Length: 112
Length: 111
Image 1 (cartoon, rainbow over the protein chains, first blue to last red):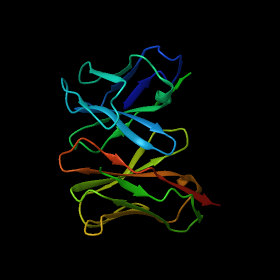
Image 2 (cartoon, rainbow over the protein chains, first blue to last red):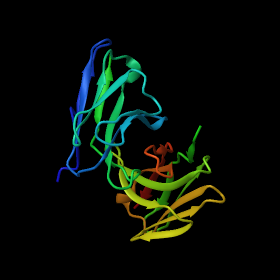
Image 3 (tube, each protein chain N blue to C red):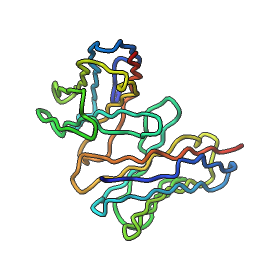
Image 4 (cartoon, rainbow over the protein chains, first blue to last red):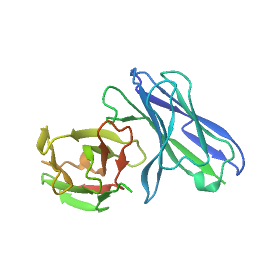
């Protein structure tokens, strides 16, 4: 049981480039989430998917898109990266109780 | 705007002492509360959750909830150097999928 996995672990982008962060979970959880964590700002929700086939905006969705590919996978796309998107990105999932969330190892993204 | 407030610390306690971490929340509709531990450079790890007023104990950890005062706390008994980490408090409303996190309290346990 790997839990929640994320790829890549590290990424450096130039301003304007695009990329997709991948997340997968093997816990048969219905709900999945994308957060960013910045120094002094704490964890902020970008998007979430309550169940397969649905996605909703969180607190800071601008500049991001998501796809819930299937029950296991939830991807986050940056269409045109900006330096303000430099952050650590965490994916999380939750099962029967929506709020007990379990986190992946994170992706450290730098946009220059 | 739902807010969860924590003292950023650092909170320093000697090994073997009780560490007390506190959290307040602004949304009276919040019903579920969570404590996560995050080691430097690692992801948050769920250590406790509490839904009802009162105390909930799990090993060396005790979570306390007072909904009237909108206050949540985490006590760590017999603190160990391995408990040194940032502790994140989070809250959510009934049936909600969105957790609101505090900015975390950094705990240092001194050997």
